[in-house]
Image (cartoon, rainbow, N blue to C red; front, top):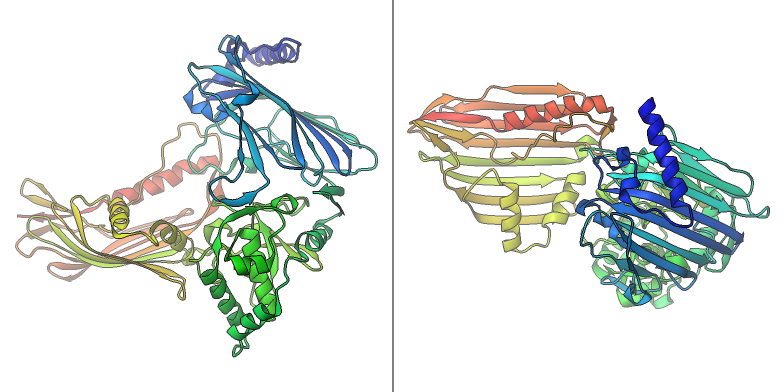
Length: 635
């Protein structure tokens, strides 16, 4: 108790110094508990927002962060986003050494001004104004402040004080002031267990977080925002790029977006409509029509980033995409929707938080959310979802970029929250079928065929499709890293879009696959799918853990052993059954020197307590052990 009181006293003293006229940036002043086992410490981060009217907002931002070592250098950047309706005012950046002595005041000419989408955007009004500090010594402290004036009250900055692992926080504050004419809505999440104070009324919000000790990104940790504090803020009356809006729920907000962001961008000339109708003139089934249109879009267009219109949210016109042959996710999705409209197939533009880590559009709080758009096709047997930016994925396949999450579906009647496809364990399947022969010296000759579906299809499609033979040689040597001296005589990959499968065929030889040990020849039984590693040991785990996606591997391999050697040992049958999944291997004798090896691994997705991590780790250790089982032959 005494130590806690002393730590809190140091924090209070530090904050009082920090907010005095002369800031104290001496790293020695930071409480020791906040510096322990972290890479950086946020001394203070202050966000102050004044909403003057429906179309006027002033944001004042101040932050000081001490970088303790090289691993904290993500904080060496001061980055501000702006566009024609978001103006930067009074930017200042100062660098201090470990003792809090100023060593550099950044000059205006030292900031860089670049397009937010340099390198892959056709054109963009969105820009980045940034400074990159080049550290010489550690620790150092970087202080920044600036103001943003904007007409866009449709985007009010949220409060997410904990944005990275291994970063402690002395103080983080968020203040918002508005007026009686504008109703402020808030959505608070994950406050329990954090030292947070708040002082809110009808026109003012104030939140403060104190004394947060940075946490480690442990293996299988859930994404930060699933367990750290967050406050979303929005207005019922708002403005976006000069277009006023008013809404009270997702339905009304979706209606506003439909009316103001999409109408007028779905027009096509009559000659184009006639051309599109001819594509499906002999087809009556709506889904079959949609497949033809989807294939047409994939063959005709390519993805390129385009940021224009209302804050980059309004798609370019469908006819422009048709004539140019390219578009961004908004343009390509709108174009596909427009073509489906022409042939009488209903579909809806849908907004999603895309990424391998699953993130929902918040169903309880309407606002401008999401970073990607896809297309929703309502269907009696269940919704069909289309990813319109890829020329490779099959019709109706989402994969791990947009699967299993809440999205906003925008219809003419308004917004609806729907959930994208959840891939079952059996759908995320990889089957391995092959054979190998071992000679008297332990050399291997092998043929193997891999077939993957679901999210395992994604992994192999993204990694292997379109690669040349040299690249594939490197990829498969890495995948089969358990086999040394490998030489491929065949590498074939095929994206079977019709069957929703990715297929790979290999033929190879390798010397010394079997290892001589005296008069014994040790032959690893699992040649083709031996990549199981146990996760790292965490002695005092702090966080729960998450298995984000289920999957199933089924392997069947024929093994031919050298007839001039005597078989001393064949591994026994193994079966493991846990709440995290199952694993089994079995060797079935065909005749004296020919065997059939079977292996099955099923991993079950779920959210688990931190106490479950060690049992899961033990399960994976057992898998790794049995995957390395060896057949023993005697010379």
